[in-house]
Image 1 (cartoon, rainbow, N blue to C red):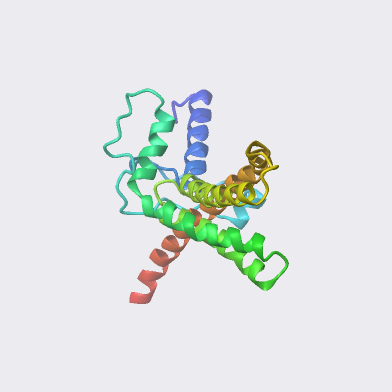
Image 2 (tube, rainbow, N blue to C red):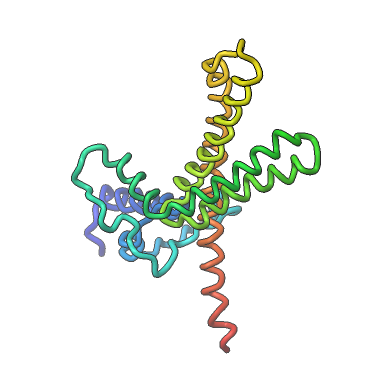
Length: 215
């Protein structure tokens, strides 16, 4: 007979749910993933709608701790932690951010045409790629790539408007770009999340199918 109290069981279930959320976002560290115990199967419940569309995927195997060498004792830890992760994998968000800008520009410059549609796909595909390659924290890398594309586009837009019409104030242009910046950040978060999830799922499927091919 188990000696665990109802409070202990509730805390265990809360911890399991927290780990599942981190794993789904690709933010579960290798140390936590190795220490995680398999969750018991839910009885009589098939999970929520999103759980059926995106079944939980485990963390990538064989990856080192993305925060190895990070000083956890200093101030502003959340900010420094994200900067540390971005510095550790510059290509994942800078290169994909440049590609996302190309798609972002095409989607606006050629809106309503085939090139505009292709640009939209390139934009979102680049953000997915940022989450795929930024395995340390896919949502962070997707958001960073989206903001890189936006900053480049916004800077070119401000320069172009300032040179073409001196009556338009830079502050007015910046104010009009704020909603677009929020939209890009949300799009990058979603694209990065999906890229990280897609990579974990494909890795999981390949590991499951590899033994069957050897038989």
